[in-house]
Structures are given as structure tokens and as C-alpha cells.
Length: 314
Image (cartoon, rainbow, N blue to C red; front, side, top):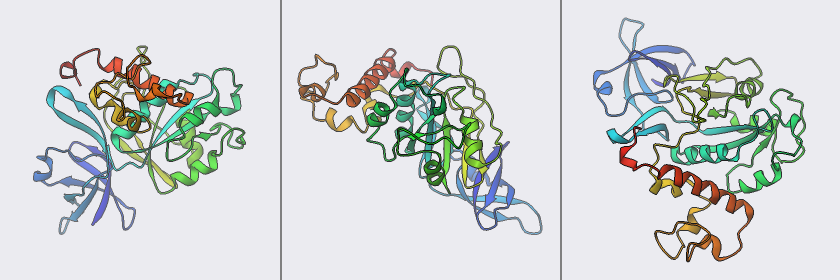
């Protein structure tokens, strides 16, 4: 019987049956527990009920569409925390905390690394004054995304979008029947947004932001939470801002808007700086949005290259 893993605990898994929606507790067969890849939240599995009991066992784990993971560099393996997620919803705010372009670009890297479709949300737009950032420019620099950014106020659902094509209703429609992971700095209104979209109060675990700005590990435990028309993966173990486990030589692959230009640079080791000879980014005048994305790439590359990749603890 087909099911999906909603949470795990001590080698036991709460699974939701696709046929009835019933939640059952299942144990994995020994051969599955010995696999290199652990069973994680979001996995689709095949269950079998143990005859003459109320107990279930996991017989098969289906192939995954994508994985949310970290690379453990020194162990040469991936640590997967969840699977089969549709969207990475990157939530920013117009004030308190102030909008940070770098945060959006960091999680866009994660979205493309994990194989998720990114959605960028500008929240608290009822407080937007236009002093700190230009929402039109920020939307245009993200025009390469499959879906345009969303303008809304989770606190005031009646807020009418003024600058962008997409608002709360368009976001609701897109999330229907899908599984999404919401990320954002502390205070941007992730929980409020999820509750507004669900039409009810949704309690999520808190992933506090450390003073270093790189986030803090609370736990790697994850679960799927039903939110009416959609589902969200609540995973406080995802570190908020760090990209430390990414090999700098792979970084350009996660900038799909820049990679085609980079491949046409005259030299394979091009640093993509303004004084780089034969760099395609500076051979002709580029739009400011493209250059702002390149600025993020160069900043991340410098950060990731500060230590030899093999020596990192991830």
C-alpha cells in the first residue's frame, strides 16, 4: 500500500496512507535500515500490514525526485533531511528585519542545488516605503525564475499588491497540492505566512538566527505538516545562511542565469571580475540585475574559497 513518511522517531515512521489519508506507524525492514540512504521525511514508500496485527512495515522506498541535504565533506557523503519537496519558499520582509538581497541569493543557490523550484516572497509590504530597496528592481533581477516574486502582507491578508503581478492569492493557488519548505530570517513572518495561507494557526518549531548570521543548529529532525490545501516541511535543522558545504568549483552551476555567459568566457579559469580578460560579463554592457547576481556569485565564491574544500567540517 502506497504511503508517505510524515515523521520519524527511533527507526519508526509515521506514514500517511495515500488511499485513505490515515496516519499509521510503521517499522522499516532490516535491509532498508542498512541502506546507505536513510528513510527520511517526504519519502514515498510501500507498506505492508502484518497479518493479524495493527502493525505495518515498510517494504520498499521509492526513488526520490529531489533531496534536501548537506554534504559531509570529510565523510564524502550526503546527509539527507527530507525528500520530494516541490517548492523552496524564500521569505523576506520589507522592514524589521530589513531586506537582504544576499539572503535571497544564498537560498536560491540551495534551491537549485536541491532541485526545488524557488519562490521569492516579499512580506510585510504594508510597511514598504521604498527607502531601503527597490522592489521593482529586485523582481526584475529574478526574472529568470520560473515564477515571478510575490508581494503580500501575511498579517493583513486584504493587502492589495501595488508593484508586482503576483500576490497572496496567486501564491495560494500555486501551493495547492504541493509540498513546500519555507525559509527566511528570524522575524520575516514565515509562521504567520504559513498560517495565513492555511487559514488557521500553524505551530512551527523555531530556528533561531545566531549572532554570527549563519544560523544555529537546533535539531535535524523534520516533519511534514498538513496546512489544508498544501503541506510544509518543518525542518529547524536547516542552517539558515551558510553555504560552507558547497564546493566553490560547483557554485556556478547553481546560478543558472549566469552559467551560460560564464561558459562563453575566453578562459576556463576566468574569475568573472571586471578586469578579467575575455570575461563575457564585461565584454558588453550588462543589465544591473545580471551584475548584481554576479556580485553575489563572486562574494560567495570568495567566501567558499577561504578554506580548502577538503578541510571543511561539513
